[in-house]
Length: 327
Image 1: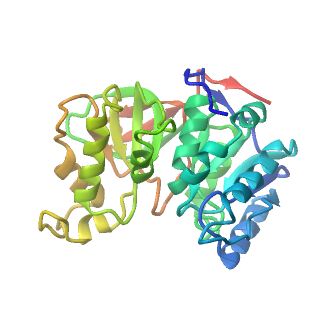
Image 2: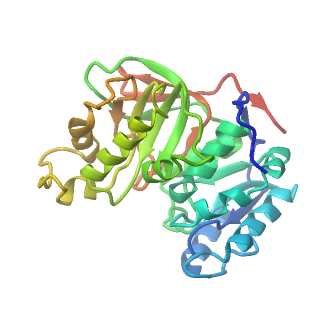
C-alpha cells in the first residue's frame, strides 16, 4: 500500500523515557555483532530496555536478511505496543529495495519515534512528510551508539526521544544569508537523489533542506545538487543547510583537477564552490557546518518541525510549536 500524497499536519511521536522499550531494527546492510552488542549496551546504560528485530543478526548478500525478512522484522517492532521507539542499527545499502513493501497503514496506526540517518533518510522523510509524524535524524546503534555518544550527543538524543524538540544548533551562515523559516527536512544527499523519479521522493515545498553526506568529492556533491535542481523538485525550497560532508570533500582530488582547499573547512569549501547554483532560484546554500550527519558530533535533528535560520546568532533554531501530540 502506498501512503497518501497529501501533506498532513505534523505531530510529535509519543515521548520515550528511561524504562521504555526501544526496538532495534535493520533495514539495510548486515550488522557487525560486536558493534551491535556495544550499541545495545549503551542504550541499556541510558535506561532503556532493548528489543531486537527478528532479522537483526541475519546476513544475506551483504544485507541484514532478505528483503522480506528485513521488512518483517521492522513490522513486528512497529506492531508491538510496548515498543515506544525504533532506532536503526546501521545504514549502508538496502533501504530502497524494501520501500515498496512497507505497510504505511501500520506505521500510521502505531506512531513511534524513529531514529537513524544515512541509508534510512528516505524512510524518515516519508514518515515525516506522508504520515506527518516527526522523525529523528540521529545516532544509530551499531555505529554512533557503539562508540559511545559524547555528552552533547547523548543530551540531544535523550531530549529528542523525550519530546523536548526545541533547540539551537550552531552553524555557519553565509554572508548576508537571510533569516529564513520553514519545515526542517533532509538527510543524506545521495539517498535523496536516489529517490528522484520514483514515488518515494518526499514533498519538500517550503522546507529548510538539511543535507549531509560522506566520501563524496565536491564534483559529485555539485552533480547531485544540480540534478536535484534540474528535476524541479527543490524549486520551492526556502534554502539549504549543509551538515557534515566528510573529509573527502576537500582532501580527495576531484574531476576538475582540484585537490585540498587549504585553510577551509569542508562546509566552507563546499559553499564557496557550490553557492552559485544554475537555477538562480531560492534553493541555495544558506549555511554550513551543522553538527549532524556522518561525523562527530552527530546531534539529533527533528525532521518535520518548523525551524528558523538565525543568521545573526549563527544558529539553526528548531521550534517546538505547532505540533499535535500523540500518546
